[in-house]
Image (cartoon, rainbow, N blue to C red; front, side):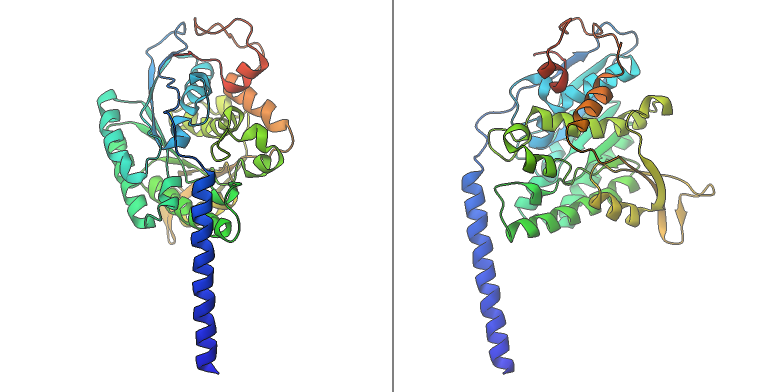
Length: 351
C-alpha cells in the first residue's frame, strides 16, 4: 500500500507539472512579446516654477517604463514627475532608465547611468520578470540591494515599488495563477525587508489593480491584456507618490490627500502585512530612540484606504494634480484646458 501511495503521489506530481508547463506555454502565446519600446517622458516638468530642478530617475522593467501606453505623459515617470512638481511647487527633471523585460540583474547598467545624473530621487519598479524567469529570490533581492545601496551612497532617496501580484493577470489560469501569486508575494516581502534595511522606502503594488482589472478588463488593461492601461498606471503612480514626497522630505500637510492608518511593526511583520494589502508604504523608524528591538528593525507602515468603484479615479487625480484651483499653467507646454483623458493620464510634455 505504501508503494502504491508513493507511486500515485509521483504520478500526480508529474501530471501537475505537465499542467503547469502547458499553462505557462499557453500564457506566453497569449501575452505577446514587446514590439516597440514605450514612449519616453524625459524632460523638465514645471518649467515655470521657481527653484533648482529636482532630478528624478526611474529604473526597472516594463512597469517602470510604461509599456502599453501610447503617449509620454501616460508613463509612470511622467505621472510622478508631474505630481511631485505640482505638490512641491518645484521643477522636476525626469530621466527614464527602465528597460522593458529587465530582471533585477538588469538594474546594474541602469544604476550606473543613474549615478552619472546625480538624482535626488530614484524610483525602482522591478520583480515581475524575475518571477516569470524563476530567478531565485535571494539572487533577485541581492541585485536590488546592490542598486539601492549604490544610490543611497550617492545621497539619492530611493522608493521601491515591490513585485506586483502576477496572480492577478487574466491570461494566467489556475493552478499556475496560484503559484504565480505565491511566488510574487514571496519576492515582494523579501524586497521590502531588504530595501528598508538599506534606508529606502517600499510601496507594495501587489494586486492593486487586480480587482478593477477583473471588473473592467477592456478599460484597465492595455492591448496585450498583461500591462496596465493609462488609467492603470495613473492608479499605481497615485500610491507611489506619497512615498516619493515623504522620501524627499515633504511636509506632512502635503502628504495627507490619501493618508492612511500608520502602524509600527517589526520589519518582517510590516513586510508580510504590506504584501497582503496593496498600496502599503513601509519605511524604517525608531522606537524609544532605537532603530531595532528584540525582534529586529522597527518599521512604520501606512496602509492606504481601499477604494471601490470610481472613487479611486477622483482620489488619484486629486493626489497627482493637486487640489482644485492649482495652477495648471505651471508647465509652459501644458494645455490650458486639459480634457478628461488628459487629466487622468497626466498633463506633461509630449516629448
